[in-house]
Image (tube, rainbow, N blue to C red; front, side, top):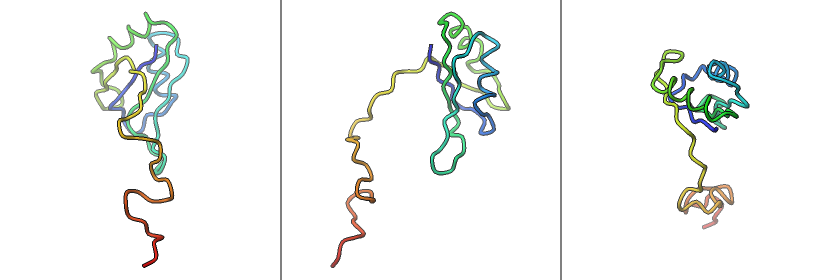
Length: 105
C-alpha cells in the first residue's frame, strides 16, 4: 500500500518517517520529498507498506495525529497523473512564458 503523508515538520527526514510507520508493520520505503532548488523538505512524503492491512491500520491511527509538533494528514496515495496543460515542454529553451531574453531588436 502506498501512503501519502502531508503537513510534516520540515525537520522530518526519511528515517524518521520510516520509524513512525514501523510501529504499525513492515515498511518497504519511506521518502520525504525535497525541494530541488533549496534542498529543504516540502512538508510531505510517501510510505510504502507491503501489507494493506498494516497500511490501513497506520492510516487509521496516524491521520490527524501529532508528529514532531505538527498534526499530520495520512491517506492512501492517489496514482500520479499528468497535470492538464503540461505538455512536458516547460522551460524549454531556457525561459518561461513568452518572453525571450535572447531576442535581438
